[in-house]
Image (cartoon, rainbow, N blue to C red; front, top):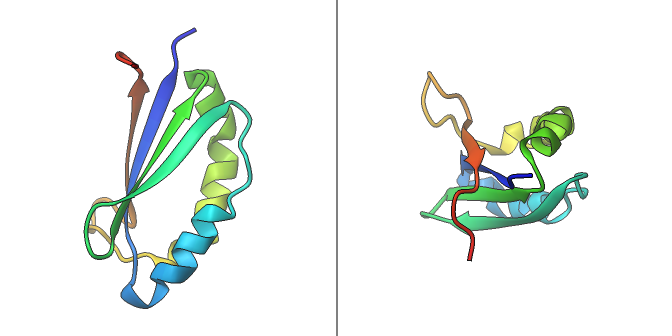
Length: 97
């Protein structure tokens, strides 16, 4: 089965950075997730990158991931009116070394 990845971009409110990092560190394990990292891409900008066993694992975990995001929305700034507070993409892993 093909591994799958999801990437979510966040813009964290300046006064909430420490709380957001703690929230991310405290996330529960999701079934089928192989690994997850949080990358700092700017002063208040971050990307979460998850590696999953399969697309089915991501789909099954989506409700729990959204519920977790709902508890952190107050810490995030809107990226744009069209996107809201997250910019998410996902797809199959095509190269892994």
